[in-house]
Image (cartoon, rainbow, N blue to C red; front, side, top):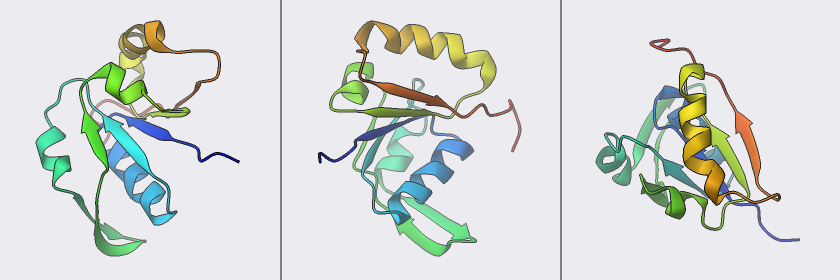
Length: 112
């Protein structure tokens, strides 16, 4: 059985929480941000504290390039506000195939 590859779309609170969860489960993933504003910060890792304890995770790849985000990915985990769904669907759709799985975790604008 081949290994499943994930891309987390969205680098806000929801995307970062998902990154910690996947890391603690031993899963590898990439992160995508269309704005790129969090990219440099996340390239240095992500500190967390809470119910999972405290620590720092390493993120294998952080990008704002759609083609790089899609390359080798099986499952996309979208963590973006509902009002942004159409934008991201239009951004990703030309590059997707029938085997890709998209999961949308609708987050609320200014919900943190």
